Length: 537
Image (cartoon, rainbow, N blue to C red; front, side, top):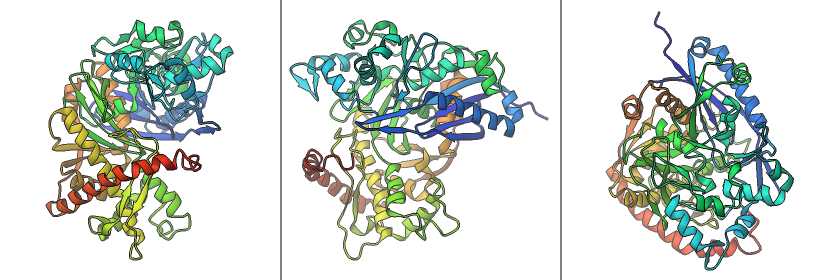
């Protein structure tokens, strides 16, 4: 009997819950366990999670993997995590949390951000001089919505002064998991990014910028040391080893936040090799050799898991969230679509029903268009006031038309984004890997191929992309393989090629889609700054 190859316990902590998998260096994913973790939404734009609940859930999923796959668990020599980003936890000198995790959805820090970084002349409430420095050194700038650590830390400083006084370190989500695993306080080159205090001009030497730290309003000693994503940061503490059912000798590799890990898990580690991730939100990302920012499109290349490269990421605010909305708000709980026996409300299997319906509607959804801006948009336009909508509904329109229009609307927005990506990369994209939960739909993959006019290569296990990415980062960190080996290990399930017969319809519809944005953006600005502004926010 062949020996079990070395395994990496890959942690995948998202907003919805804790997941873990056992990953071999060749990318084989054995076992999968998950537990939900609640999100608390608070008045005034707050959103929090309990980090202690994360840790408890991690113990539960590790125990489940141990019961189901004891041989692979015994072969674990490395632990590596991928997590949601832009969360903030204040910890004391003993590493205990003083606050819940202030989530990436939390906007309470926005006014504190404007007070700290205001000045004349200003853009979105922040000094233009400061913005120019951020762009030059980091490649980006704080979100004026307050949804990143730069604002979260100021929220704690200004509204929780006693907590701030006791804070030894401010940690991102990944950093806190690593602290619990090793007892060591560090930040990775990508987890520290949205604190907006680093000089990112040399990819192999990401360091704190004295000028940015001095101006950030947070004491320097509360910012953790920076490590590379592939660094071995220690071994499991006795408490962590007992919690996970592993040996204390197991090494911990620093890991990465979710979009960084997905770029590795998608197998796109070479320069200018893009992948399309379709989940609740979506993005197009590709590794590139240089630091660059496209201010007009909201696209930048930032530090990532590959030490001598940057990751270009172009983020679309809502993708699969449009289907979740359709399922939960239009397809009601007692709908025959959900009660047909073979279809459940599970987010994966609902695609079986959708894929049965969509091919019955011709490309162009019988003239119905959908704009997928349920929560505003990030790129290629940064506009929080945009909203979703169906256009050109008639008495002949049926629910199947609406469903296809939603799938196509997300694809049109991705085509708009892809144009900006082509400009950023300096060459047209002709082939793209697709991963994430949205890739489960054959119909959606074909629509993406037709609308974008490019070959779409589907990941054979799209739901495992973050865990596989964490596994591969862990394998590189412990010398089991190199990043150059990864594309050859990637497994493609199916290749979708554009249907030329659909191209003319989609070209014309895309032009109308762009026209809709130009005409509706001022309307949404008025609606969402007027007496209706609290609705849908």
